[in-house]
Image (cartoon, rainbow, N blue to C red):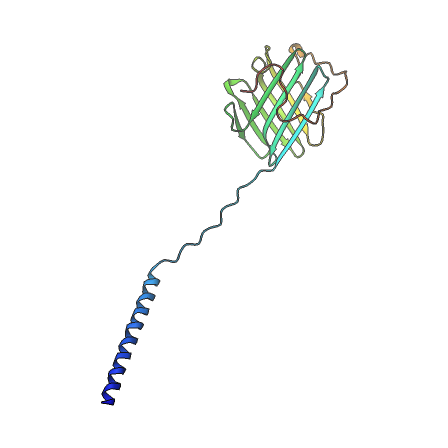
Length: 203
């Protein structure tokens, strides 16, 4: 009796062990079939452009030209030109991706800005600490309220309050504005959007 009881107990233990071992093997096989969860890629850091603002001015209170420029990573992103030849004024406000101009970077240091409605263009040539804006037949009536075209160039330098002008302020007949008066220093409040007295934006 004792031997038969031991044999029965041994068979029960063996059966239980077989069941437990089989379940474990089945669970392992099922887990092996499932693909491992994909590792999440770290989110790409958005690039924040380095913003820099430059401004310069040249002329007297009644006759002067000035420009404010906003740079993103060293490239011109936005510029506002304003000139006064009393009682006339010119005002142009041009920004990348606006509806009123087309920007094309044709090289590392050159950008062409074409204004809407065939009203002219700018060629921006940059070199280290200087940015030269070349005016190409800008419609004077559209932006200044008088006949003719605006041509020439304006150059702005980092760290300098005065611009360099060539032809931009010339009137018809190549008469130049009077620059004999004292140069008006650029006020600290002068920003990318200069005040306008008359004339239109570059829109």
